[in-house]
Image (cartoon, rainbow, N blue to C red; front, side, top):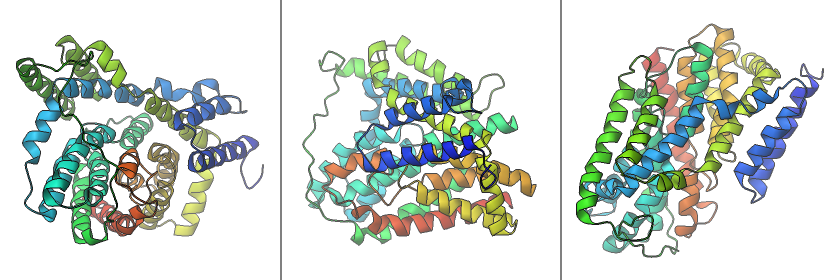
Length: 427
């Protein structure tokens, strides 16, 4: 034992640090890195094979995979294109453009992948920039931010929300409502959008690398989809998605969110809103591996006693004050999420937050909600989230451009998250 930690615990720490260094300083695929993490964890003493690969048996990993199929139905039926055309319109000026971009994008990101939402709206940004005679770089970072913060509204909006809620359900036996984060999230999103508008002059002006895109909806063979076929499938896929959300929000006994999403995915394929081939091509298997690896890493941090030692140190520094525990947990996790996967960050800090709540004798739910807010405050680097990375090249940005608005936005975001959580949950 060294500093209260076993050999297995120290090996997990070394493995995690090495993996994060590889993710930061190399171009290796995160999926490969996390698969190696799971394989290495399975070989360590004190960690079983089933614990290392527990992520593949996780309901949340299945849910993420099924949601890709639902999104495929929306995409290939023309529903996504329909939503863009009817929600966006043509703004009169730059401020209105920011509002009409960030509000719809954040709403859509609450029910679909932020990566998909960002890619979908890039074409809108290009058209608006031409009409308003501004550079696309003035809109692309706000687009990425909106796609990131919108996912905070629901448990399915971002992988960190999914991973934290699934771990919470496993520990407490309580399955959270789909909109559990919404009261705190809406406060954060409103403040975040206002910060972007107030600091809009700090958004960089860079020469764009974007190219014109073809908006024509095509099938799997590259043929244009007829407007009549597109029309009824468009409304059908939208109806399936709405039904899925309503059923999930109603918390029907014996029919959890994963079951609702699974049924919705099957209906998308059965009604030909998308084909089976399109559905499975839409699934990002790399994200699923990263998700599963994050679950395994979080379990290793807990079973080896690392989380317990971190909690003891945290409580010592905070003198067992729950509010200070919340503040430090938010600050540390929000800084770390700028350089590592937000999913991994959520999985890493969940056991710390859970054990801190247990030792303090307080309700763990407020700490879970505020942790969701903090690990998704990835605003200051282009590598922090997929949306940031997607617009990085297109906008012609420099690495440091994100921090100009991202750092003050992060500070306001965290302050709002902590304040709203304290007020709403009377923590």
